[in-house]
Image 1 (cartoon, protein in one colour):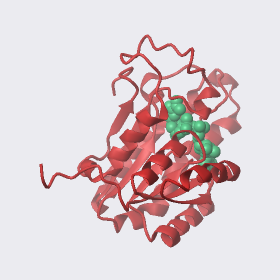
Image 2 (spheres, rainbow, N blue to C red; image 1 turned 60 degrees about the vertical axis):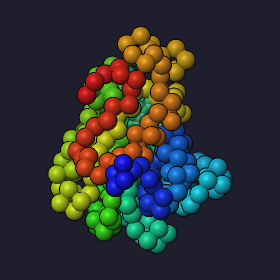
Image 3 (cartoon, helix red, strand yellow; image 1 turned 180 degrees about the vertical axis):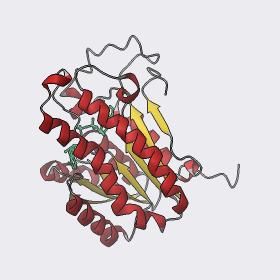
Image 4 (cartoon, protein in one colour; image 1 turned 30 degrees about the vertical axis):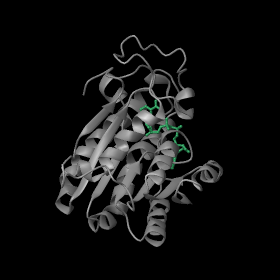
Amino acid sequence: MSGTPGTELTGRRVLVTGAARGLGRSITSHLASAGARVLAVDIDEDGLAEAATGWSNLGEVHTARCDVSDEVSVNSAVDEASRALGGLDGVVNNAAIVSVTRAPAQQVPVEEFDRVFAVNVRGPWLVYRATARLLAASDCAGIVNLSSETAFSGSRNMAHYVGSKAAVIGLTRALAREAGQSDIRVNAVAPGFTDTEGARAIGDPDTYDTTGTPLGRVGVPADVVGAVAFLLSPAAAFISGQVLLVNGGRVAG
Ligand SMILES: NC(=O)c1ccc[n+]([C@@H]2O[C@H](COP(=O)([O-])OP(=O)(O)OC[C@H]3O[C@@H](n4cnc5c(N)ncnc54)[C@H](O)[C@@H]3O)[C@@H](O)[C@H]2O)c1
């Protein structure tokens, strides 16, 4: 059908946070392969350098160190997006502390709760503040925030993580209302358990109980990448403030 916007990402300038490993790394690989121009950032400089060796054959990927919980660090990464990419059409707020202490809420140190919220919630908020002006100049601007199925289902022994991922949904909906005035779409993707380095530190994908999952398996990064790419693309031009669960049907939103 001619005139229907597609999932084309060629030339789209995208900032991906937490890109050194796991989902962020796979998202960056996919976007670069699809012709997007990417600034991949992470707090882990060594991991980023190692990942960059894989990206060099795929397309245009710039890298920079960034701690998303730190305002100065975020602003400097966004300056780098201006310099290297000449602006931004998309942001993927993927960086998060995933490998949290698994313990009853009474036993989680207050410092860990605060750090998880500083990275997982303040991070996307700081990135939004720093990128909104650049995104407003784009003809198809989209932000995708990574939430989690656990924000819907709850999960034992990780209340600080689950609370932070629920906050990401609230942030997504609130920012969608503000950013819509500048034609910026803000959506969230909420994966179920997905086999990454961060997930393996808190659960074993090989023994994960999938009896409650209609599609009968745990997720792999490629499952999530497609949802993120779709929400960044012109095909999602009228979708904002939404949460897309990517979890094999385990929990409905
Ligand atoms: N893997 C899963 O099962 C799963 C499920 C639901 C949601 N998610 C979400 O998907 C996203 C990616 O998860 P993952 O499994 O790939 O995790 P991961 O731990 O494998 O990777 C997270 C990346 O974020 C980076 N990071 C951490 N703190 C940072 C900071 N302060 N500044 C910048 N970068 C920082 C890490 O260095 C790492 O490269 C997260 O937002 C997570 O909450 C994952």
